[in-house]
Image (cartoon, rainbow, N blue to C red):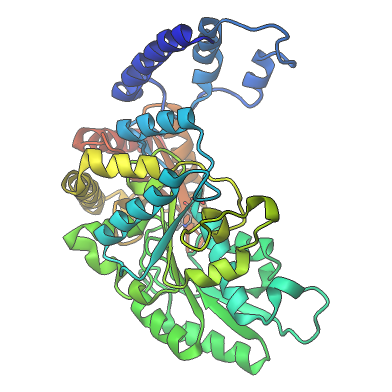
Length: 474
Ligand SMILES: Cc1ncc(COP(=O)(O)O)c(C=O)c1O
């Protein structure tokens, strides 16, 4: 592709993207194809000769587009309704063009320094102390894995050099989270060799928050059994109900017990920008590490995760390793991003965070978040007032958990679960909206997550009407 071809196709592609972002609701939200359709439609081998870009785009529209589930639709209400934004898309385009690989300061001074600046902006917006140094990872799962490596580094002598296997002098270890915590903590412990059995899932209260009395009991039990507690992971915005663990009380326990506290604020952390939600990070100023996901609720195209720690030297102790060919003369004056994790190369992700924060401005971001919270509250009221629906959890952010449970029915809990499951399938098959489910205390719950930048009252109202209509056929 020569320069003039690039210019022409680029302009056309940007036009396509602009139309797409403005009208994503034209498409069925949930891809309506069957498994294998795309593989069958594409050749098994790469072409030997160059193909025209127009032909490639035509196949994109004909074959791939039907296989896209439209996270960028305002009618997307599943999981966490994450959304990219136009400034983020442009930033990713520019980042791809620059092809920065920011392992060392010198391989991309701009990416290295902008990462510090943009994470500093975000840190101040959500009210974390300036002592928290930031680094960008791809996902919250990877950030949490790094936090667990740091906890292991502090608690287990010589773990970097000697590892864990075959060391009879090392006791079994334990990490604590709630029974609502995201599976990324399970995977982190599996990945770093602490073992899945070292995870203790602490019981939660009526509002799905970690019970600190149960946490203290579990730690005491482990100590009595000769197990070494090393870390606690409270969550701000759990995956199913968005409940908020009592971080300040957990911090107290961690300080007393000398445990690493890693706060998973992947979803809820950005809400601390709102005066109404500043309290959600209360206690996080005492964290050893915290993760916040701009790619969840800050209009940042996937992926970009912010990880902060006031103890980044532990991370560097665990990970810094510089082969001769990566030594540089300025290494004593600069921070090399490769020192804060497993990964060597890093993309220029901070460009999109910087462009998004500047293009929106904090006031507009807050207005979007406030609208999402308000829409969720309105939906919660509609559910509370409807005799055939039942809310299943409080709504601290912008996610509502509920179920269809008709007032005059004699259905058993098992039948109710089956009917609600069928309702999810039926509604999603319409393609008009896409929402998901979870299980709460063993019961199937419907889950509407509001977070798209263009989701307005009309979209939520439509989702609600659709649910009522389809529930009538249950
Ligand atoms: C509370 C929480 N933490 C962590 C994650 C993992 O996020 P990621 O996809 O960035 O790894 C999720 C995903 O939904 C989550 O809900």
